Length: 513
Image 1 (tube, one colour):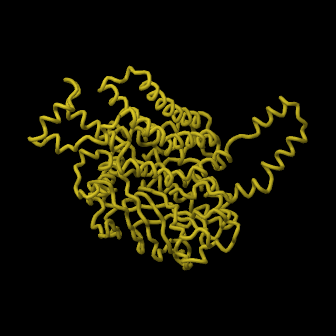
Image 2: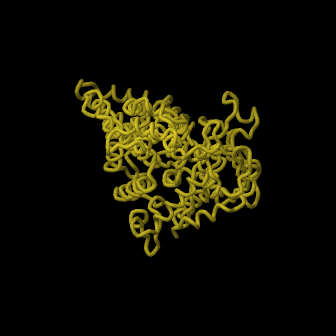
Image 3: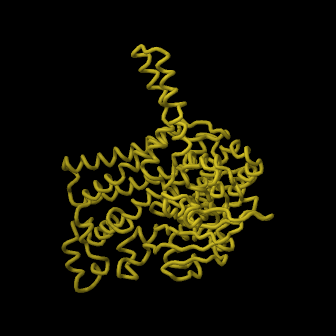
């Protein structure tokens, strides 16, 4: 059954070993670095029960009500429902959160599509996948993803250095497998379980089979340790308790990234999804984002709305909107935003049937949409920064606007008219600074390389999913080429040894979480 917020908070009080700033965290639900995001995830759970939002946030399976984000997609309508639910969450909390579960459960659906591959090694693993998909649907856990290892020296094989640089199996028991190593996992310190999988690119060497393991990990299991980066909430440079009003986004939406240590952790056999099967590892690396990319791109769309809104308010308050140069920059932001929207919409409208019978977003449109969204993100951030102007980096903090000695001067120089008073202008500039110019803003931009894979991998996904046959066939007929030319092209590219190696060995998300 769907959970509520308090049930989620209680599930985190399991004695887990969490560290941040070198100190052990007693309770992640109350710690200032974690509480903002715990509260948002709890809010998502509560929205599933409230009259105003429960119909958007849930689906009915017979007599049981489940979270719409966890439900398997079988139709276009299922994807429209997921998109509405994600938008409802972002509208409710007032910002973008990446790791709340709906964007990672899709990775399990990718594995669901690969059951035939897994049946080659052990039919039990295929059964485990289906069981866990339904457990996520029925149990409604906060489910995250575990991909990237520390890796160490990538010029060396794992066995030629500290083997713990990549997560691997150290022992088999009657109860399950025992694993050691580490993974980087955003939100793991306040999540319930993680789909844990490998990131090695070249699976042609059977000696790597100890590393070819995927499983569901209970994040409250013995032997788990969570070493977190310092969050942006509260702390700011040398100021340990910065005013949240000066950094409204960082203090509410920072999702803490964690180095999760697996110190001889037992994974029960029923939680093992594949093991010592390099073909399965290669398959999941090549198909990891076939569903989850949709949720990531949708979040970039909402980020675009935030950037456009902040920029437009800034030019309107200062009377610059009528200038052609300003309108040109606003139009560039709008084109980028609508390009993302168009790719998402078309990916659903032209969805494909997956190997397991699911409705899979059109892969070529989805992957090209992701490249459009992210390759233009840095440029669009700077465009929005230009529209907001230099005041986002020079405006004093909230305390200066309130102090008796300085308040009159702030009101004099920051009030524009009766509608734009100093306090509203300060709020807008602080918002724009945190969105575009702060430590948090830089972190969120770099995070895309981690969460959605490196640009070369995104382009590789486009290459593998685009329909090259259509343009080739058109030119063949237009140029009146012989059939032999087409056959030779297919031999050298589509079915050739080089392309086969590329498909099997190029990591779709080697740098992705």
